[in-house]
Amino acid sequence: MKVERLDYADFLSEAPDRQEAFGQHLYAALSQLGFAKITNHPIPKDIILELFSWGKAVLDLKESFDMGPKDDNLYPNIWSDESDLPGFRAFMENFYAQCDALHLQLLSVIARSMKLPDPDSYFAALCAQNSSELRLNHYPAVPRRDLDLDPTNGTGNMRISSHTDFGTITLLFQDSVGGLEVEDQTQPGQGQYLPVTADNCTDIIINVGDCLQRWTNDRLRSANHRVTLPRGLGDGDGEGLVDDRYSIAYFGKPSRDVSVGTLTTILRPNEDAKYCEEMTAWQYNQSRLLQTY
Image (cartoon, rainbow, N blue to C red):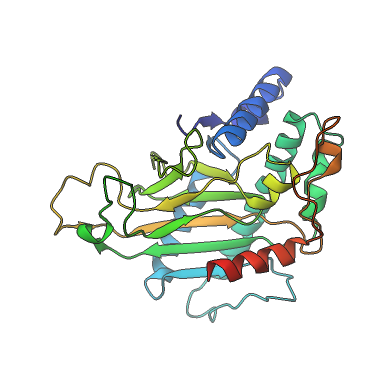
């Protein structure tokens, strides 16, 4: 099993057979592993390279930066003075909007691949009041020995411990340092992880979040993933340093007031819903935060 790399140009083409094939490949990847990579997507290369440049400039001062939609009254964004980082706010708000558009488009592709009614709005309507989060991450350089894994069980110190994402779909941009791993879904719970390589910083890694898994009654997988010692560095000098790592994640989320129970229109005849409790996306997000922190 490996993370599939899919060409988004197939979906953007006007050829129905290419569009359908892309959707089926995406659905297969997200239902089997919960992760995929897409290339030739709508976010331009120069924008992504500029994003990493901004990330390094901002994260010299801190290890993360978070923002949400610009009209969020519950958690309004906090910006530095324009004179401190000229152009940063405008760039980030524009980039956030591009991620939001791609997030909704991917939800449409998934709905279409599942033969759901009104695919352009089936999932997207549940995200109409945007609460998604964009995060810039900086993992400082660390001694190799501090990230050594126990070869008997695959555990050890992590840059980020194993977890799932809470929302719908995450869009991840990462540099070439590596270290991201996803749990092998053919051996869940056995401590077996697969590397999610950083071949090209303009590729977008996409993964399913808990809410989308719940809506689809586990048809799509919200897989555990972590950031640890990059593969290939485990046999080196334990005194050496693992380089700084930079990544940017757009955590797509539902509207805060929608249910995260199984969507009954997805169910097949005689299929039981696995998630029946009354819980909103906001309540679910808060419960997961309490478990995590």
